[in-house]
Every structure is written in structure tokens, then in C-alpha cells.
Image 1 (cartoon, rainbow, N blue to C red):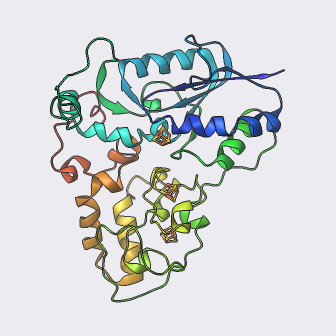
Image 2 (cartoon, rainbow, N blue to C red):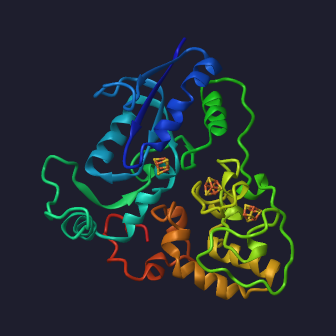
Image 3 (spheres, rainbow, N blue to C red):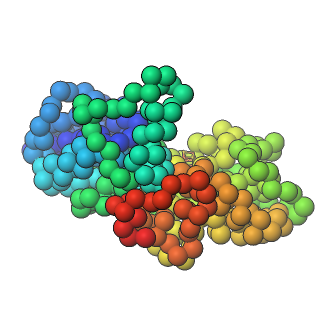
Length: 315
Ligand code: SF4
Ligand code: SF4
Ligand code: SF4
């Protein structure tokens, strides 16, 4: 019997959908009898046909997102939060730090690209007061983070979901796939604002550059450090960070850098806090991150507006 697959996109960039479409042929070859009954990027299907597997991209940002998520949950047997936006809020999760009015004012009323100062009217979905991941609104069965997830993990995850033999997905961090070597280099200084470093063989941390590979789940096969750019954590928190309530990104990275270079862990941690919108950019809206007793994102973000009641309900 053909497995029916339905997809939906909420507030995201559609990159995750493009990743699935890129896989279409491989997926069909892999499992042979997949039937896509709803794929917004490919077909004009306004309803929510019944399906075995539902794949949802994007965060809950608007009333429309919330309703669409609920429709998907009711219409599918198994629901997958697909990509870092659905799993953790993703980049649009930074809206978690601002109220609705601030976001609209900044984007439209005073936004540099809107010279007429026009704001959206009733023709566009109404924004919610905050941003939340998919599982804050409906029950989620499986999570596949990544921005977008690498095709290897998409194929492996879908194979398993559709009943085919598939190896278990690794829960190791990005460092496990990175070929750069961590070496002790006492005296190296913290390179603030740097995203690259001169030695292509050495770990970025050993060169004083913040790299989030050790605190990020590997759902990408480490392309950034392989191409000379430090990891910014787009696949979301590592398994350790999710499991352990008192572990957080900044202290783990700070301790590792101190061990490798001698830069005081406190200095690294303060720098990460001062750049919280960068280093926490992909998972800031997730309770898995902001609920930790060691994380004070609102204070670190500094100029953030008061957190709206809906988004801050668990804090
Ligand atoms: S996870 Fe990344 S690629 Fe996917 S929708 Fe969000 S921003 Fe786009
Ligand atoms: S911290 Fe970054 S550069 Fe260092 S091993 Fe991990 S992924 Fe590679
Ligand atoms: S290396 Fe880091 S920033 Fe690059 S794709 Fe992987 S998780 Fe994202």
C-alpha cells in the first residue's frame, strides 16, 4: 500500500521544503510507493487530506500557522517537526524577544524598505504575540532539526518512518563529523566577531574563534568547518544540552575554549551573552533553551521589548 505523505509550511523560509523536493526522486526510489497528497510548494491543495505521515516546516508565528498546525495534526497519523524552525522556532524565533507591535513597527512603519509606512491589513495572517515551536501547539511524534536537515538525515528519517530498514540516527554533535583537530594553544586570544581562522586543520576554538560544533546536534555533516566557517548552531542544541537542564551553550563552549587556549571561561561566557541574538539565533524560542535556569536571554538581549504573555508563559 502506498504511504501517503502530506506537508505544510508555516513561518519559515521554505528552505526545508526545497530540501524535501530536492529529495523527491531519491525518496521515491527509496521507498517506491510514496504518494504525496499535499505539498504546498508543488501542488495547489488547499485542504488537508488524510495521510500517514505529516511533515511540517516552520514555527508558529501567526494565527494561520496555529490553525494549519492543528489541521495537520488531525489529518495525519504521524507528525514530524521538520527543520529547526518547527523544532525550536528557528531564526524567526528571535521574534520571541519582542512584542507584536514592536515587530510590526520595526518591519513596516519605520522599516527602511517601506517608504510609505504601510502596515499589513486584514488580508494577511494576524501575528501572534510571540513565536513558539510546533510542539507548543500540537503533539509532535518525531523531530528532524537542521536548517535545513541534510538529505542524508532526511532520507534516513523518512525511510525509518515509512517502515524501511534504516540505521538509527546519530545523536552526536557536529564535532563528531568535523576533521579539524582540537589542540591546546595557550596564549591564543578570543577573536571577537570572527567566523573564520587562518589554520584550516585546527579547531576554531583552538584559534580563539567561537564555534558551536560541540553544542550542536549533527544533522548537517559539518559543512561549515569543512569550508572554513565556524558553526553557528543552525541544527539546534546537542543531545547533551537538551537532556541536561543545567548545561547550557555558553558555559560548555567557554569551558572548552578555556581548556584549549587559556582564555578565561568567564570572558568567553560574557561575550556569548553579549552576542546572544547571534549564538542563540536558532533555538531562542524553544523552552528547551530559554527555560534553563542558567539562561537569561531577555537580559542578555538587552534592547528586547518585554516578553509577551503567550510566549513567556512557561518562563
Ligand atoms: S529551518 Fe532553516 S531552512 Fe528550514 S524553514 Fe527554517 S530557516 Fe528555512
Ligand atoms: S568546535 Fe568547531 S572546529 Fe572545533 S572540532 Fe567542533 S566543529 Fe570542528
Ligand atoms: S556546521 Fe553548524 S552552522 Fe553549519 S550547517 Fe552544520 S549546524 Fe549549521
